[in-house]
Amino acid sequence: MLDHGFFEPHDQPLLFIPLGGTMAHGQARGGGTAPRSPHPDGERGQFELGGTEAAGRVADVLLLFATGPLHLGVSEIARELGLSKAVVHRILQSLVSRSLLRADPGTREYRLGPGAIALGSRALHDLDLRQLAGPTLRRLRDVTRETTTLSGRVQDSRMYLDQYESPQEIKMTVRLGHPYPLHAGASSRAMLAFLPPAVVDRVVAQGMDRLTPETIRDEAVLRATLAEIRRSGYGTSLGERQHGAGSVAAPLFGVGGEVIGSLSVCGPVSRFDPASVRLLMPQVLAAADEISRQAGWDGGSAVDGIA
Image (tube, rainbow, N blue to C red; front, side):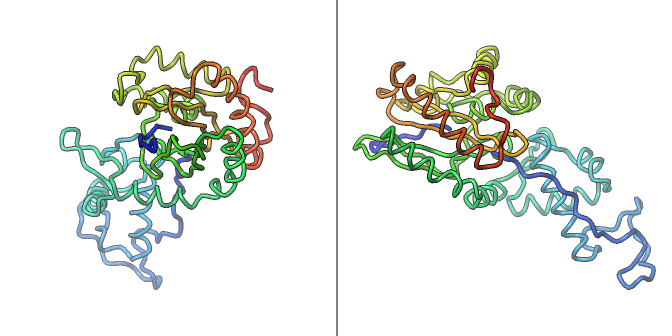
């Protein structure tokens, strides 16, 4: 926010790693035969499983939401994990009761809840990326005299992980750990432009909420803007998520060339006229390249026309 305060919009998602070590059906821990399941589908109930196996299944269900579509139904989860629908339903109800998931009564599907977002936010706060990017962001702040930020992706949203505030009296500060949409704001689109097409399609299909009168909501305009970001390597935002906020942002890449976040320079929109953006652009790109290389990316620039 400006001090006079406003917020400007700016994740690597968790990988789904199946948990091993589960017992074969019908075999008890001591090597004997387990009691026959009373369930007609042959699946033992969630609370009849050994503690480790039950915990593993709950974790597998939860992790599936970190890599798959935003919404998942019982049948889809059961098919993906090889579990019965009855077991999946019980696990989902347990997760909903703890706010880790939310149920949509209209579609009978589930999505991550506020509890999961809070856990993800805490994990993102502890990512090594913050420590890695800190010195570069601090130097960029000192050179530009504007606030610099670091963002990460959380499923189909973005969160600020860190910021270095401008020394100027009128400046912008951001809210760390709060989810923002991927279609609005320079830092969000800097990541979205380099994510797989399926992610872009999903963001469009979910609807692009109007956050301000300047928010891009037209699919053709969004896709054209993303293409331009891929060509130039950076994106801009002028009051798209919050009135009066301006920013220039670039993506950050990891070892395999995947997007791991974005950085931005941001401040009052009055200080982000075309001439100022042209001056900031090479500084932002250089800082993003420096952090990406420190993160293990050795492929040079991943965008057309940027050496």
